Length: 328
Image 1 (cartoon, one colour):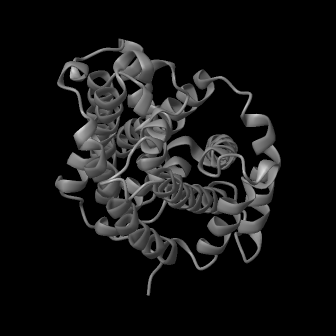
Image 2 (cartoon, one colour; image 1 turned 180 degrees about the horizontal axis):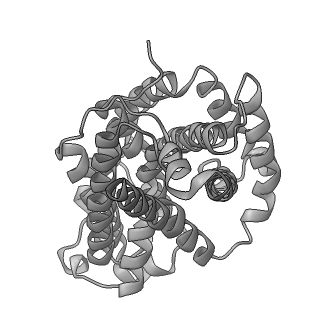
């Protein structure tokens, strides 16, 4: 079996990865602005995926052709560094899922699972994420249904600022990381996955605002976690924060696996570096070391990095590649 992704696998993997910024960052922002940003990001990602699959090449292969040998190496090295930084930041966020129970060892758990999931290649990792997508859908559906009776109509009013839309746009470009992997050449069709990617981050933000109030939501570091701690069904089902922690951990594993596979493909094509066995472990070990530093980085670093490497570079690569193609 070729180590290439089908559109269905890409959709499931992308939604799993997107669940991390949606639940951990965007849930505390103005829901209407989040919805606007996620909808724009979903359209951009779908457009770039369509162009990439029609070309029959992964983004690293397109970068090598568009920027030339030396230029492709420079851009590829920058992409790998960003993917390492992103993996470190995602791993550091695992302390939220574990409620600091594991202390400084918390980032090691999802990184270890990601290294194991990516050892057999991107196709095997995509199949794992397909299973995780079903688990995430079930867990978040239970949380959402349990939250409905706490909704206050007066708290559903739009709030926030345009900065929330910019943050949502950049962070919801996370599924664009799939561009760095090899597809099977089939053109993705806009459907439920694109709609889900556009709507679900806004739904998470709306749910927190409607249950906790916009004023309190804006002050909480993790409003979705606070919401789940207050949920109960008939005074029997409680401790919904355990479901949320499980969902966040599964999402982090899927996201980290995607980042590892993307770095592997970029290094192989642009830098001429083989990615044999145990290299996944080296990448994850480096990410674990850097994770102790990323928690001090401001949100602006992640916004600029996502906009640059998951937005600007893919678009610029397509533009330059088309210009060179037309010249020939």
